[in-house]
Image 1 (cartoon, one colour):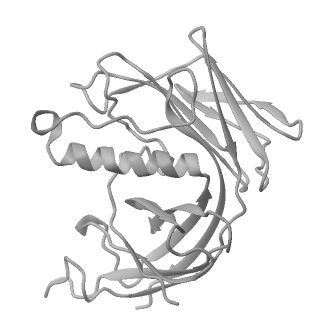
Image 2 (cartoon, rainbow, N blue to C red; image 1 turned 60 degrees about the horizontal axis):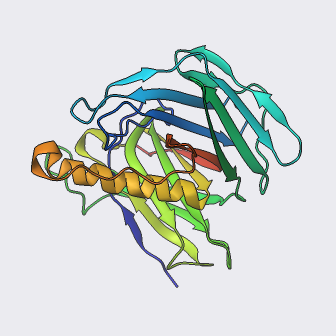
Length: 274
């Protein structure tokens, strides 16, 4: 059975290639935002701690220094992260293991925040192919050969799989927030999962393409899925055209925004043939 997926990007704001996500908080008071990942790849892995501004000053964030950030697992490992710049904290030794549970604790400004995430078994990319996107929105006489990418991987039967995709063009992250879940494809071989991009992110012959398949837990999937909805709501009207979007559900306690995710990562790189 063939399962067809097309993913259209919703653009999120990024600092470089890291998962720093500028969330427009539905609240007038400054709120703490903690965005943290670990994976089964060698790090370092980063945690970003920022404070939001109010709703009428979107995309203004101040790094929070001086936090105590601790990560531990259910096997007795424990590590304190090191602050390497304002609001950016780095691991040094941790390497995530599948099916282990991780807890992150953040102590800052006399408050404590904690979150849990279990690192899932990785989905694996068998291959990625590039082909001219004849149905592309931006193909014209000046740009006739823009590409899309087909990803091939096996969904695990009887397991609820969730994933994110990251796409890199010549080493630079492009595109938006691509998500996958197996609600309609449990146990199937996925042989037509492809991406379309905005005009500024079009790919051409000779470009180097890297696609990461990041297997995530349900909490992380829900966060990014709701973030997509919030961004789409904001883009469709802004603060004067519609009500403020809701805040994405997350796994932090004590009122923090953001997310903590333990992820498994697989990747595939190809050069689009000339």
